Structures are given as structure tokens and as C-alpha cells.
Amino acid sequence: MYLTPGAASTLGERLLQHGISRRSFLKFCSILASSMALPAAIAPRMALALSNARPCVIYMSFQECTGCLESLLNSHGVAIENLILDAISLDYQETLQAAAGHQSEQWRDEVIAANYGKYILIVDGSIPQDGNSGYFVSAAESGLARLNKTAAGAAFIVAVGTCASFGGIAHAYPNPTGAVGVRDIVKDRPIINVSGCPPIAEVITGVLAYYLTFQKLPTLDSLGRPTVYYGKTVHDDCYREESYEDGPRAKSFDDSFARNGNCLFNLGCKGPVTHNACSTLRWNQGTSFPIQSGHGCIGCSEPDFWDAGGLYVRGPEADAEHDD
Ligand code: SF4
Ligand code: F3S
Image (tube, rainbow, N blue to C red; front, side, top):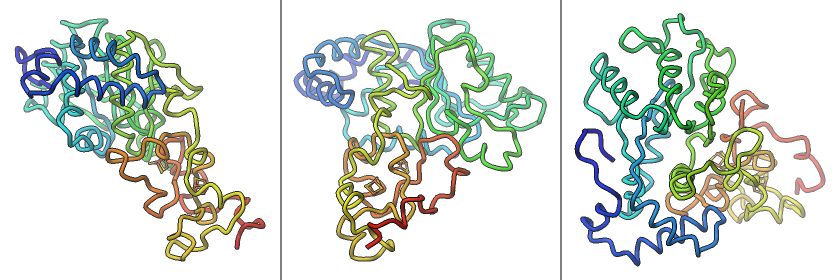
């Protein structure tokens, strides 16, 4: 990743600098391809595309908690996985760059002008819809105006996180800032929603790798999310699924059923109605995911999850025959 002009090099050159062999990189590409349900034979093509690519990326943050960026940056401990981010030229990111205020806005204007129509815009955080509200102003410009100006020159937009995708927590009742997701404002650019609070880092990098390899967007569901990662529910591949059907289900978070891998549905798990790759990809390089840690899914990748029924409210089937 680079935030200064003139420091750019291809991923291939960076790999050499880090002493990473072509064999290791190909193996990494095979794993990445497999996470996207692509055949392993695609790995050499992906490796070539990633090695030579340097698309300009502008990453803008709006009403957010920085969790999405943290997820992207901190979940990758292994050098080769870090280097996937070197396949892009990250030319603007407010949290990481030194510039602020007018200086920062001027720099973004220059990046937009130099790459108009070609750059990828990544957005996290929700956008206050009323441009004159006074919320989220930088250098005397509203967040809404800044988004519209930057979106106009983007090849496509990646909305990272549930806030940028659907409004997230700021959109929850009573939504004092009129917060919405990018798709509610920008209507004339392709938008990929990578929802989740935060999203899984491998899903974000996988979406970028797919575009760099095939020069097209992945297939999206009706909510604009890549079907390869959001086509199934968390419940579909949950390892506790057997006791969802046949019981017994856990009655409290610390009972023996919860500890022994039984279903958490009666404790409010939203896995059956939540589309995400948590139960297959898992988190922190495949270590675990919320349900494996003993907590039900709260539906964080779905629209309105803060308002839709409560995080711990039991579903209507919860009192049925599998209660014990
Ligand atoms: Fe489904 Fe949740 Fe039970 Fe897993 S814990 S089987 S996701 S209801
Ligand atoms: Fe979110 Fe549910 Fe996964 S709460 S992190 S979608 S298990």
C-alpha cells in the first residue's frame, strides 16, 4: 500500500523484495481461488494478474467506527497475505495518510483528476443523507457532496461493511443523521456491497482479486453482495446444525449443550436468515467465528439488523419441540 506518489511498484516486484517464491505465491492464489469457489487451475492466471496490476484506489470513510479498516489490516499476519493489498495503489485513505482537512481534500481532487473513470472507490461508514445537515463536514464540504464528487469518476464502488452497504448502526432508529448506504445515494455506478460488522477480511481482498483477475465484477445477489460469499446463510454450513433439527438446543450461553456444540437458535441466533461466509471461511485466518465462540449470530451482514427483532430475541420456532 502506498500513500505517497512515486513509491509505486508492482506486486511482482514487492514479492521479490520480500523473498517470497513464485511457488508460495501460486499456493496463496490457489487458496484465494478456492475461497471464491473457482477451480485451482485459475491460480496462475490470478497470480499473473495480481503481479502486474496497480489500479488506483480511493478509500473514503464516512460515519463508521474504523472496525472495517481494522478488520482488513489486522487480520493478515502472514506477509504473503499482506501483499495482496500491494496489488492496488491505495492513493487516498484518511486514517492512514498524514494529510488532513483542506490538504487532504486537495490531494483527493488531484487523484480523481489523474485517474478519472478508472479508479476503484472503497467506502466504509454510512452517509448522512441531508447535505446541509452539518453532519460529517470536512474542509467545509458535506459528506454527501464529497461522496457524490468522488463516485462520479469511479469505475465501480466497493461498499465495505454494513454501514456503507445498508446504513448500519447509524441508520438504526431514530437515525438522527438520516444515515443511508452508498446504494441509496449513488445510482449510476456499479456497487459491490461487502456487508458485515465488520466484513471478513478475506472477502474484501477476494472481491478485489476477482476484479483484478477477470476485469469484471463478480455475480451479485439482490442486495448487491457477491453470491460466492453471500449466497448461503451462516446456518447452511454451521457445525451445530444437527441439533437445530433434532435437538437438544442450548438453553443458556453457559449450559452443557452450548459448550458441547449444540444449536444456539433458542438463544436468539440469526444464522438461518443471515447471508455470510462465516461458517465456511471463519475469522482470523480460519480460526473461529462467533457461533464457534459460543455466541449466536446477530445477523450483522443483513440490512436493519440493529432494529430487526433484537439481537437476542428468540425466533418463532424457538419454543418448539427441540427445546430440550
Ligand atoms: Fe443455525 Fe445458529 Fe443453530 Fe448454527 S447455532 S445451527 S447457525 S441456528
Ligand atoms: Fe456477523 Fe453472524 Fe458472521 S453476527 S460475523 S454474520 S456469524
